[in-house]
Amino acid sequence: MSMETETPPPSRRLFVLLPLLIFLGLAGLFLSQLLSGRDVSEVPSALIGLPAPQTNLPALEGINLPGLDTKSFAGKVTLVNVFASWCAPCREEHPVLLALAQDKRFVMAALNYKDQPENARRFLGDLGNPFQAIGVDEAGRTAIDWGVYGVPETFVIGKDGRIAYKYVGPLTAEAARMVLLPQIDRALAAH
Image (tube, rainbow, N blue to C red; front, side, top):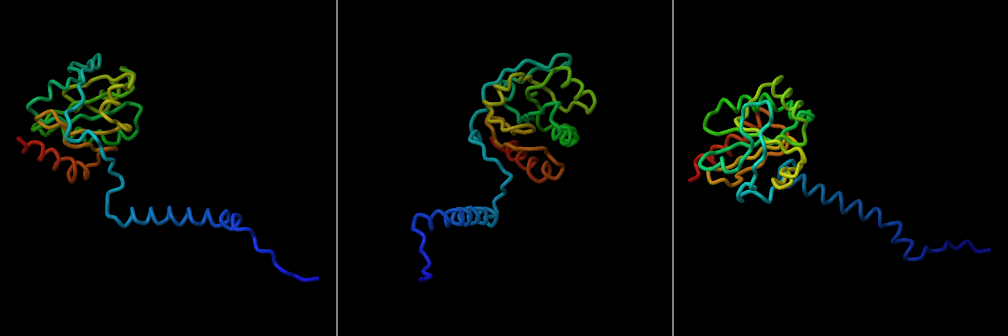
C-alpha cells in the first residue's frame, strides 16, 4: 500500500489562495492611503468653484429672519451651515458657530435640514442663534442639490456666489481657526 499524497487540482489551490490575495491587496491599498499624508477625513466636493445651487428656501417660522436665498449672497462672503436639531454633532459645534458669528466680515446663514420647525426653534432658543438667515429644507431636496452628505456641513460662499470651500462634520474651535477662517480670508481677498 503506497502512501502517495494527492496534489489538489489547480482550481482548488486558487480557491484557497484567493482570500489571502484579496487581503494582501486591500492591506496594500490601506497602507498606501495611510502613508500618503492626505487628510482622509476630507470629503471632496464636485461643487467647489461652481455657483452655489439656486436656492430659495422659506424662513423658519417664529424666528424673525429671512429664509435662505442664494441671490442674497452677491457681493459678500457667506457661511452656510447645514444643521438639524436632532443632530448631536450640530449641538457640539454650535458654540463654535456662535463665536464665528462675532466676526462681521461675513454673513452666517443656515439650511435647516429635515427638521421639525418647533424643534429647530427650541434648538436655537436653547443654544443661541448665530444665523442671519435660516432656510427650511423639510424634505431634504435642497441639501441634495448642495451635495450634502450629512449634517453638519459648512460651506464658504465667495462674493461671486461660488462655493469656495466645504467643511464636512462638526466644526471645532481648532478647525475653525486653522481651516475655516483661512478659507474665509481667501474668499474675502478674492475679487
